[in-house]
Length: 67
Image (cartoon, rainbow, N blue to C red; front, side, top):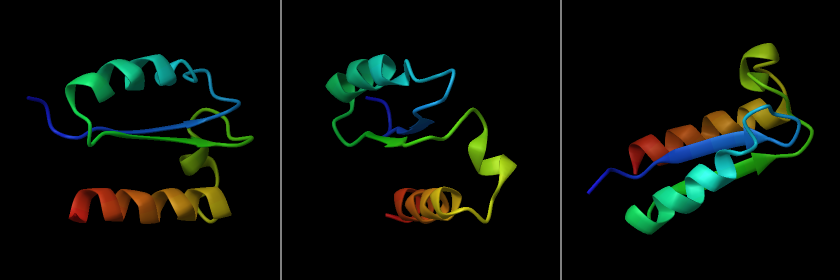
């Protein structure tokens, strides 16, 4: 079995097809998570780390890795 997977993508993201990947992974590892952030583009957390979306993602990552 694979470990839980955290998938994060923005609605303006080139990798929005991550939803399909998540649907496959979820069948194998039910503890996996997908979060879609509105109006975010590719590498958005690096573009503005102080934005609300980036701060939310950092908190989500902390929770995911420390559970």
